[in-house]
Length: 114
Image 1 (cartoon, helix red, strand yellow):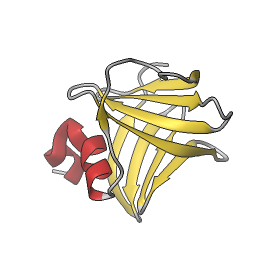
Image 2 (cartoon, helix red, strand yellow):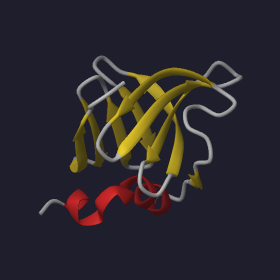
Image 3 (cartoon, rainbow, N blue to C red):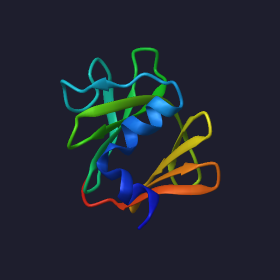
């Protein structure tokens, strides 16, 4: 059993807590007070790429079960959007959402919708 399977769907909240970045209970889907640029859906998560009022992009990951969310600055990489929270890296593209702690893969889920 992999680490992310043991942790279940709460990986976003766990990563946020372990890295000291606040997370919140999402009350609104999408990008509250921001423009939705892109979105990705996996079995357990909804990921939004949002443009804030300052025109900067950010990653918003929402746990479908707990509704916990995390917002992080995001970069546009060669093949994916990449958000970093300390040593934890979130990568999402049209095919897959991956979460790494350093080189260790914590989560990999196929994108099933946009």
